[in-house]
Image 1: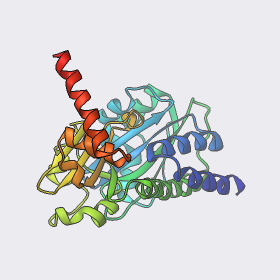
Image 2 (image 1 turned 45 degrees about the vertical axis):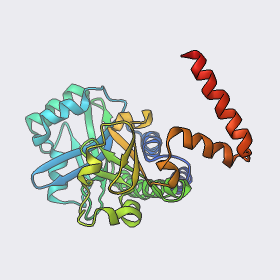
Image 3 (image 1 turned 30 degrees about the vertical axis):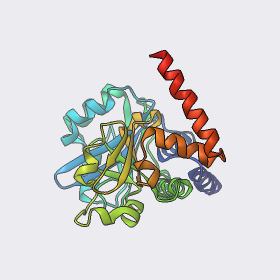
Length: 297
């Protein structure tokens, strides 16, 4: 199908330039026009026998309270129940036929969601897998055909690979020795953990799983730059605007360099010298700066 090959080409091209959130937002909007669904709920989730844990999420054409309301009926979510029983399934729901329960009918009627289809890009051994729930609204909306369901599954699998590529490309372009990862508010790694383990994992030899080491988890809600002296590492925590909708944080980690140990004044001298200034010129500039500050005082 040409539309699918076009989607794959475009999503991979965007992966080189875009961050994961922007890539997901574009892909979901594109699929909504291609397959004709009215709204969507997507992000990263963990599905296990005990239930569903949403690690990061966003929506398309849904009210702001959708996720909060879903949490009140999560135990009745028939789509999640299907995925728990059959992890590789494509889960669908029809408001007017098939299995029903109070939670699903309430959710459906509250938001006029009459046809639903949920697919996941499952990542074995990882806590968080990308999911996409697509919704058609209105009583006369048509069911998701089998070929549309397969299209969704294949598209989400391709999107999952592209988001992994976007994380790799982001780190490849970064300053040498710098690693950037995306995590949720609880410290669970979403993207970039492989690069972190490979390049900086030596600092936490007992670290296993997707939950970040305790020292990093403590920094998630502390925006700005932080020094980990024991690891000789600089960590920058960022709640960038483009990630606020999904509840993600970006942590950028790098090994400390000699310049990081300099005082502010020493760093100013080093910067001037690096620009080719003579020692005499640097001394004169700093003297003028100091005398200016003295007069201001």
